[in-house]
Image 1 (cartoon, helix red, strand yellow):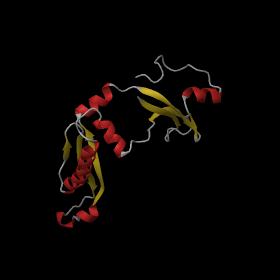
Image 2 (cartoon, helix red, strand yellow):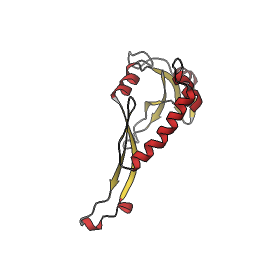
Image 3 (cartoon, helix red, strand yellow):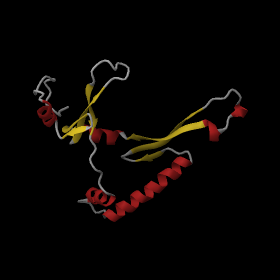
Image 4 (cartoon, helix red, strand yellow):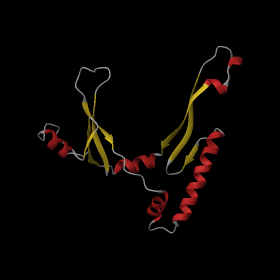
Length: 161
C-alpha cells in the first residue's frame, strides 16, 4: 500500500487565491541492498549474494552502454536511454559538441509489464498532512489539531482509488 501525504500549495500564477490540498507520495525508507536481495530471493533457488553480484554487474554495465550511445533494455523492468538539449547553429562548422550539448539526462521508461504489475494492485493509505512545516501523522490528526470537522469531500472512501 502506497502512502500519500497532503500538502497545501498555492498556484504561483494565482497567488491571491487560497491554496489547494494535493497528495504527494510519502516515500518510506528504502531497503538496504542486503535486505532487498534477501526479500527478492525468498522462496527461490537464487542466493541473495548471487542477486547482489548480478545487480553490481548491471550497475557497471548500464553506464558503459549509455556512454557508448546504446539504449539499455532490461527485460521485465524497462529501458534506460540518454537525452539532452543542444544549442543550434546556422553554420554546421560552428557546432561544438562539448560546449553546445547541455542538460544531459538519463531517462528510465518502465516496461509495460512493470507498469501494469505496479498499477494493477495499487491502493493508497493516509500518510499524513504537512502544513506550515508541521507534519501531522494522519488526516484525522490534522482535523483534530485544527478543529476541522470530518466530511465535505467526495463520496470516495479515504485512500481508495
